[in-house]
Amino acid sequence: MVLLSHYQNTASQVVHFNYHTRPQSNQDEAFVMKQAKKYGLPCVVIHAPILNEGNFQELARTYRYDILSDLAQTQGFDKVVLAHHQDDAAETLLLQLLRGTSLQHLGLNKELHWKGVLFERPFYTLTKTQIHEYAKANKIAYKEDATNQSDDYLRNRLRHNIIPLLMNEQPKFTEKVAQLATQSSALKDYFDQATTALFEQKSRSMFQSTAPILQDHTLLRWCHAYQIEPHTNLIQLLKRVLLSNEPQTKVQLSPSLWCVVTYDLIAFTQPFTRPSFHIEINAHGEYELPNHDIVIISTTKPDQSEGFITITSQDAHFPLQIRTRLDGDQLLLPYGHKSLSDWLIDHKVPNQQRDTMWVLAKANNVLWIPAMTYQVAQSESPSLYVKIKDSTYEQTT
Image 1 (cartoon, one colour):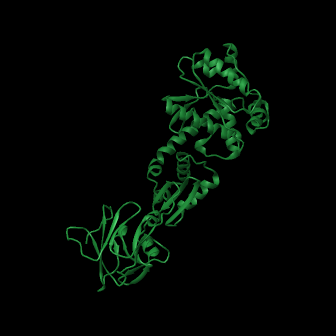
Image 2 (cartoon, one colour):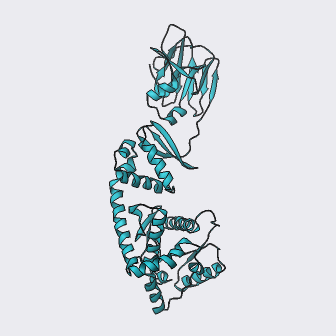
Image 3 (cartoon, helix red, strand yellow):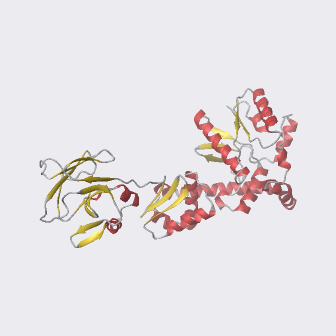
């Protein structure tokens, strides 16, 4: 209410969240709407879903910030202002110390960016007592959340039992916490600058040559960028994968996101389903691929002006297949046979590219891989002429 009074002439909108978790929830909603109306400001009420899985306060906070950032972006607002104060910062610091956090994320900051929206805390340097005194002196009506007096939540237990003890030992405890958070914010800015190249380029070799503390910071930045909760176990798993010598590997971050490592490239991508198709060829003609390209198989040599490949092999007779790769596929090389899988590894072909490429084959003998410009070794056997119409893989001999 003090924040609303302070911004009554410059605010564009008031947003109230009703979680319907207390008997007074609807009364509080009506009170906020009445105060907003008094200042001539529109008030949006968000009726939050039931958040009963996990830490309610943390889930509610994330939900609020997501909604507020969406509202700001869709309605063209410059920023969101929040009423957090020094006491909130002290409670947050203690919670972080108990649950674990990094140096550059200690406490609350004066401002933060959430999904591209600026959130400001203009009361950051004020104590709760000062805000109460201001409300009383200026006759600003407000309501206290009854659950603030309950010790059911860890934050409340810290507020009621631990912080008073610390304040007895150090009356400026909350002020010092605010100073520490300011230093933490400056450290975060420095780490952001130091990891910009790695964050953007996503190079594994660059990651491996970076100082460990900056590796951790980059992992946190990636998690935040892709809206993944950076749990300690997940960060450790990602770090172990990126520091390993496995040429290709992946880690599932959520049902809709994977971290895929392909040689030197680190990518964050949606789950990939390997496509599969099989076209049986029993005669020359035109065959349409799933991407609508046309493969033309002919026993008659095309005009020299057209791009085509020639296959002369003991396997170059019908029936043939145009299909995605299979286990057991092999290539005939000048020095003998080699499995397609090993050949692709030798050529450092990423797994996803391997799964999307198609081949021309006779049983498990691969005659042609358009994506890799491979064709079977030549012999004196009958010839097949193959070309692709309107394809980026068209080859010319």
